[in-house]
Length: 348
Image 1: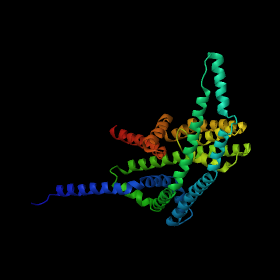
Image 2 (image 1 turned 30 degrees about the vertical axis):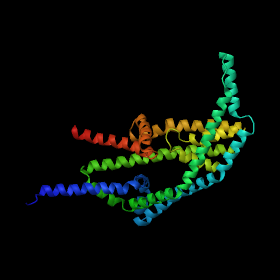
Image 3 (image 1 turned 90 degrees about the horizontal axis):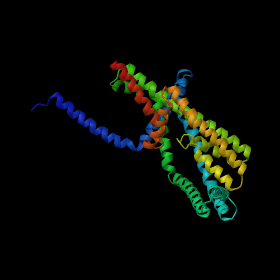
Image 4 (image 1 turned 135 degrees about the vertical axis):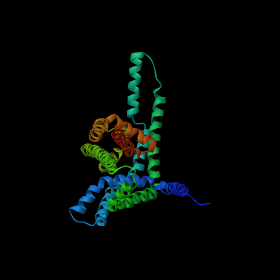
């Protein structure tokens, strides 16, 4: 029985589908590295293109330079943060626990006694402040233990994280060096016409660059404010906390609060009230300003997306996809609106 052309097509499509599933499972362990390298390539490609077109560099040498610089910019601060935290964190936790067991008054005692006096004078009710104190100290001790466990986890998984980081930059080099070939491949197999494909590519690059720039500006501003403040107040390890503030600014919702709040509490417990309040109010104001006004406004205005949609994209992306959703979420929202506009033009 002769095989028809339709049967051959169905057979080839079936084989293609099976191979696609297998390739997906092969690539899935490295999906984050692949996607993040694409995001980096979209940001760094203009620099690479400038070196090739203006300076006359070979694409391979230009891509190598851009990749190495990106590697150094992220790798060296990460190594410094990790080694410094490993060195100072145990002593800081030990000092904190000694302070809690030494019988010295803490801000918890003062705060609870004031609450007790207020409630007793105004409502004629008593509260068990000693139980609340013990539970509060237990919570703070638990947070300190979790911080130590987080550092231990990072150290124990250092080689895995390092491998992922290196793989990301190897893929980045390939994107930069062969960017035009990848673009032509996408245009060749995309079912859309050339104009719509160009709109999609430009929209993706604009979304990615705006998100990266917005987070970088926010992180730089907050880290510089914290570094100047730490120098003025005489807080040790100012550079360490400055770098931590920068990287923490990329974390949605909590942002740099996961850095300056523990520092403020720790300083208060050691009796350094001026430095504690200075860190809390100065870094807190910078955090509120950048996270609740600058980021949504900066991103929304440049992308013509309402700030509420940007915020929902940030929060929803993190909830569904984890920390990488900080970048993927708004990009998904922006690409959805872009495709919606393309469909609208076609249907009208």
